[in-house]
Image 1 (cartoon, rainbow, N blue to C red):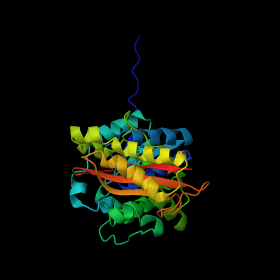
Image 2 (image 1 turned 180 degrees about the vertical axis):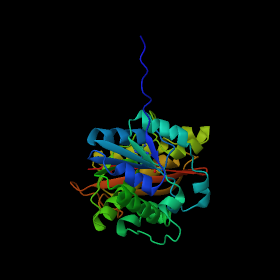
Image 3 (image 1 turned 90 degrees about the vertical axis):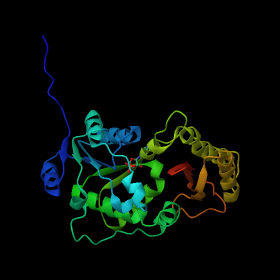
Image 4 (image 1 turned 120 degrees about the vertical axis):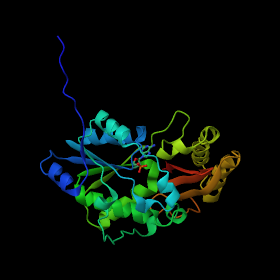
Length: 288
Ligand code: AMP
C-alpha cells in the first residue's frame, strides 16, 4: 500500500496585511532569518539554528535597494525566488515574507535609520549609505515581525554590530544572534556574490581566508602590533595578482577602531574587503 504524503510548503506572504494576519496566532518563540535571497548553505545554517531555538520560523527575502551604494550592484544581484522558496521549505521554515519594494517602503517613505560610530569604518567607509540602508530595512522588518530572535551571519560581522546597536537604541526587543560563517572546503566564505566570480577569480578567492589565517597565526605566535598583523595579511594578498585589497583591518572587536596593539583579554577583529575584477568579497576572523 502506498500513502500520499501531504505536500508541505512554506506560506509566502507578500503584503504587510498578510504578514500581520499570518503572525497573529503563531506559536512563540518566533525566529526570524532576514535574507536577500539567492540562498546558500550559509543561509541554511541560520535557518537551522532558528528552527532549533524557536516554535515558529520566518525568513524574509528582499533585495533591499537602499543598502546598495552602487546601482549596478543592485541590478546584477542574483535572484531566483522559486529556488529560494524550495530551500525555505526544505529547511522547514514556516513563513516567508517576500514583499515588493513598495510594501517595505510605501510611497512617501522618508525616514532613515542611521547608526553612529560602529557603522562608520570598514564597510561603512567603503560603501557610503550601505549601513543606513541595512539599519532602516532591518528596523522595519523587526517592527513588522516582532520576532523573539533574529539570526545573522558572523561573515558580516560589522552588520551584526550595527544591527545590535540599532535594536538597543530603538528599544526593539528582538534578540540578535550571530551564527558562524559557513565556508567552502577551500575556505572561501559562502556568499551570493561568489556566483559572479570567473573561474580564475574563484580559484584565487580563498586568498581572503589564507590572509586572515596568516593574521591569526601571527597573533597566536605572540604578535600584538596592529601594523604587523595588517602587514601579515597584506603580504598574503599581495601574492595573488587577481586580488585587489580595499581594506585590511585589525580593529577593536567592540568599536571597530583600528588597533595600535591587540590587548590580551579584549576582543579584536581581523577583517578584509578584496576585489576580484568587478566582484567585491569580505571576510573576517575574530581574535580573543
Ligand atoms: P544576505 O542574503 O547576503 O543579505 O545574507 C543574509 C544573512 O545570511 C546575513 O545575516 C548574512 O550574514 C548571512 N550569511 C551570508 N553568508 C553567510 C555565510 N557564508 N555563513 C553564515 N551566514 C552567512
